[in-house]
Amino acid sequence: MNNLSLPEKILLDHVKRLERHCNGKIAIHLSLSKLKHQYQKPNHMRIAVNVIEKFAVQNEGHIFLLDSSDIIIICHDTIDEKIENVIKNIENTFINDPLIAANISNADKKYFVDIFNLEIEYESFLRICSSLYQTEASKRKDTSNAIDKTVKKQNTQLQPLSPEQLGKLENFLINADLSNLLHRQNICMFSDKMVLQPIFKELFISISELAKAMLPDVNLAVNQWLFQHLTQTLDLRVLKMLMQTDDKYLKSSFSLNLNIATLLSKNFLEFDADLSRKTRNTLVIEMRMVDIMSNFSDFIFAINFIRRKGYRTCLDGVTSDMLPYIDRKQMKFDMLKINTDFNFYNDGTEKEFAAIKSHIERIGKEHVILARCDDKIVVSNGLKMGIKMFQGYYIDKLQRDNKNKPSTELEKKRISLTAKR
Image (cartoon, rainbow, N blue to C red; front, side, top):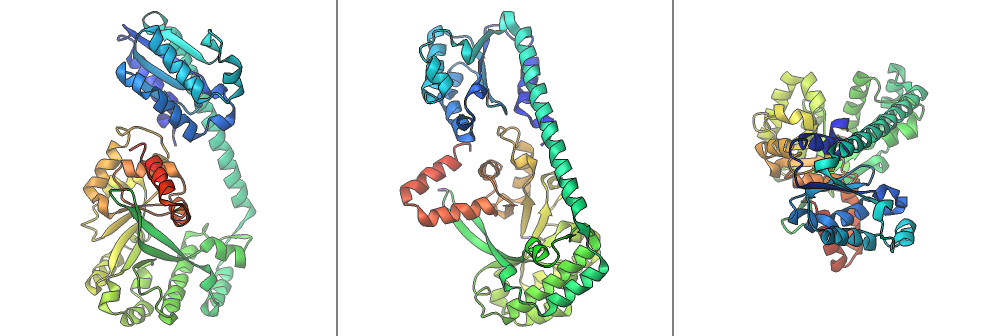
């Protein structure tokens, strides 16, 4: 995520625009970053926002939940009693924190609250907002640099895949039993009542598990062309496994992510010949964007071929910045799969999501899947953008929880998930 999406940056920009419109306005700075770390988790912060939301609305205010866990309210000035009630409500919410507990009877709330009259204290408040932004921007830069160093270190420790190693690996894959590496992951849809419903399963070979088992000191993906060749070999093994199976996969809707070269191969024709027309209608063929761009003429032939056969199609490997340039219908895809990126982790407002949401509506929100959903905030933001279908480890967790929890607990989870919609 870049610094432009920092809540502190959004706050600073807002305050700068207020310079000539400060009459009758105040700013309340709640320094919740002073609380114990255990009380600064996202669910605690959402509760704090809910506590002050009514006050902010009544006084035409804006609430800013900062990355530091501080909360700032900018609103019209009001009577001291209303402000005091907000502060008391926050104190009662975090009464178990040692800082709050020790100062609950303190009439001077300066230990965690600062109030600014913006008519006369605008410059002072602007400097504080600027300092908050610089601090968080610096933290983010340090975090980003640390991640880059870690990734570079990991990459230097792994050797690139060589043609000789690829040859040996492919020879092994010809007869190896890969059933323990074949994974199934549900693509699910939320109904209007927020009930999670499986739509179909994706079947795939775990490349990371294969690498760990066969070549733990080799980075399989660093050489793009050798890696592409390896995925084609894996495609053929998956097709062969499905042809030899007892049809348990073929009896329900599922998807396969296949290379264009695989779709035009003799092996796929043999696989297709074993399927009935009815079964083809339940199978979704996923194609990766990077493969399409490098084999566009073959892609045109392949997409027309598999659609005539009755298969459904899905464009995979899309990022949010690609959305303005994609015409799903013209490319003849039934579905489109977006990989989660920083835009889906941004705890922003509906306005910030408007651009992505408009592209999703143009593409067809009922045809969009958000993949790699490993966090609750990603799903929540995806719902805000109009997305209906989701895939990822967090969705897997929700499904497991649904099997083990009574209906009252499920209702609480649904309410929690949709609280930001």
